[in-house]
Image (cartoon, rainbow, N blue to C red):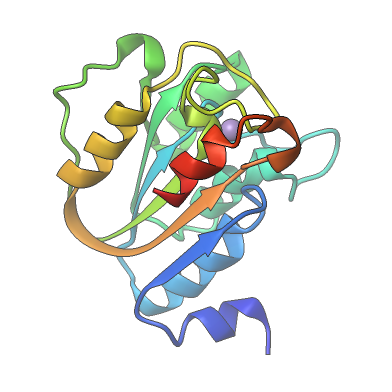
Length: 181
Ligand SMILES: [Mn+2]
């Protein structure tokens, strides 16, 4: 049985580890069950490339595939601080709502109609709080801000993933402790 059909049997799924490659099959599974899926995506990177080094299924392209295939009605990306001109075009093409980190207002609360899937890339958080990631992008969320976003989230949370934790760079263990929280 493939991961997509396996996961579509469950009401709620929380996946840990890996990169955004995992989000795509999980979202495909949920899209079979829910026709109006929303995604809240916290990340330093938009992962909206049409292809990355010639590969259309790179972790850097997964949200482009998700939107192309109509797997979500709404994609909200928050914490982004690495947008290229190409990715801005892709966001426009797919109607992705992006709040770049430079425009972040901690008073913002996220509200979704219907089912919502939360995808949390640990590098959304500032490397000062979460150094255990492969791609350090300074100027991210504090631990408190990310926890508040999740606590204040309004909607029917049906699944989540936590990706990009890299223990080899987590010398103090602080990122693992945060990811566990
Ligand atoms: Mn990332």
